[in-house]
Image 1 (spheres, rainbow, N blue to C red):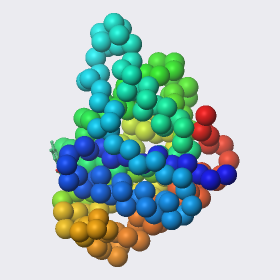
Image 2 (cartoon, rainbow, N blue to C red; image 1 turned 180 degrees about the horizontal axis):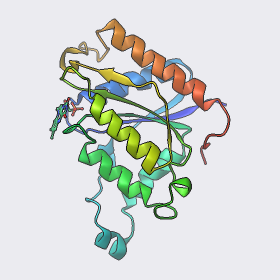
Image 3 (cartoon, rainbow, N blue to C red; image 1 turned 90 degrees about the vertical axis):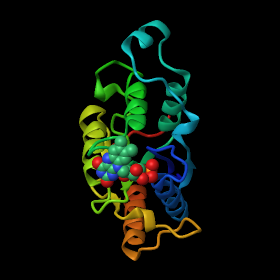
Image 4 (cartoon, helix red, strand yellow; image 1 turned 45 degrees about the vertical axis):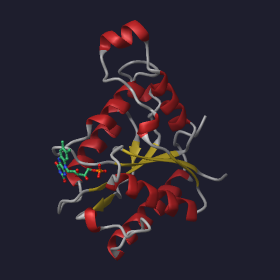
Length: 197
Ligand SMILES: Cc1cc2nc3c(=O)[nH]c(=O)nc-3n(C[C@H](O)[C@H](O)[C@H](O)COP(=O)(O)O)c2cc1C
């Protein structure tokens, strides 16, 4: 069966480095034969999570829509900026809202449970957003029960990392992106993972 993979970035900034990384990853996955959906969180605006709001109005429609995207694919790749050594609020908010689908505080029952993820980051800095990915990994694995590939993409000095066509300039960056794409496709052909519904 053709693997279906959802790809998005944790930034909606115009010119986002992580949106560019997401686009490169989408291309690499497609070259490996995956059916890829590249989406933007800009198309799923949600209010800041607030328990009173949830109590009064339930989940925002866009949380449901994004959750359907996630469950409609075999795996997800997230390219996320590092904000103050952590996860950007935009992405954390989307994860928090969508985590409220299904039994509350029950990672094994959440839409994320045993779903395969790969992650990457692009940063103008020297560390490539590594600390942000540690935080993202913690949320996905410990908080949500997802399975996150050990291999991850880190693009340091990413401001100069892409050419005019949006391709990666650095051979090491290219190799890393290809490796993670390949591992993700291989991984979801394995057993015991959440399949799309
Ligand atoms: C609030 C804030 C905090 C940031 N903290 C970090 C950081 O801890 N480490 C880092 O490498 N870059 C940090 N940055 C810089 C981002 O990596 C940079 O703005 C990057 O381009 C954001 O990703 P994007 O281009 O996909 O929007 C921060 C930026 C903002 C706005």
